[in-house]
Image 1 (cartoon, rainbow, N blue to C red):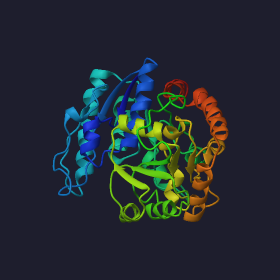
Image 2: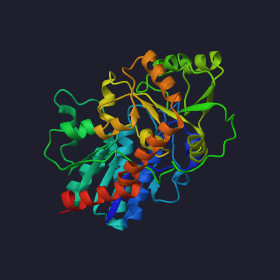
Image 3: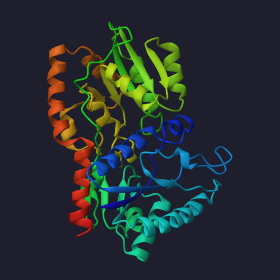
Image 4: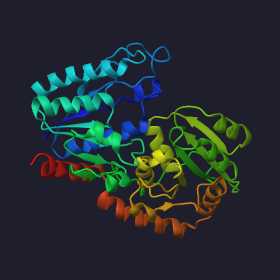
Length: 380
């Protein structure tokens, strides 16, 4: 199968240099596309580099060297001017797509999220070339009560791939749909880490952005209420927050590590004892999001303290350590509880996660699920 993917996979240098390039999205996309390649499919990328609108961001962003060289594809450049950049992106994507369709001869077009330029490009390929178009919906505004905006913008799609289990279950339209949340390259839970920090201290790791979906104020308050003292709390990710700065200033257990490379992040995951994922259920848009960091965390076989949101399928309930409610007190209490686990309990937990993960959540398995669905439901 030949697939054109509208969306980028960027180099480590681009991840480090440009705040708007999302590390988690980059890792998720690379995992799925490499899985498809390993299954024998050909993939061609068309992408632009995200950038804050000018003058805060670059006027003409994008360079072909920013695309990860393990993938064939191209970067489209655009005038990053307020109010008109989305129309420029639409034109640039269509131009690139026209050339790619003629030279690559794809069987299907997949796009990373239903952005304006992706929708316009998908509709274009169906109308002009009769090539199926399927949006892969990683996050989307809450479509309730009537999915009216979703219907208006995506009615031409040949089918839908939802990462959110709630979105998959509740989408009211007749097109074929698939639930596919994510994976990881391999199981890391049996690797023995080489510890370079104080081995007498347990470590909690949070890796991600500081934005509205995370409720940074609640996270900072929860971490400040953790009673276990002989620990370190490592915070990785782009961006800043006054709540996090205040936490770091007042609590010597907290280390803000900022952005780290994928290799560095892997080492930190190996050395951590406990992971944190907070996306409060009362933020409506979290309903249409699957937090991809969860599968990255679980691949290391260590407990994850996590909010429960409707985007998660029920099978995750067995493995996530969910606080009683989304309050700083409950979250801190759950963290203290997990820090108190015995080695036997940790081993039993890792064993159960390993069995599930290796049976269903490697990227190759997820890519096979996607390609089988495309062949049976979309390309039949």
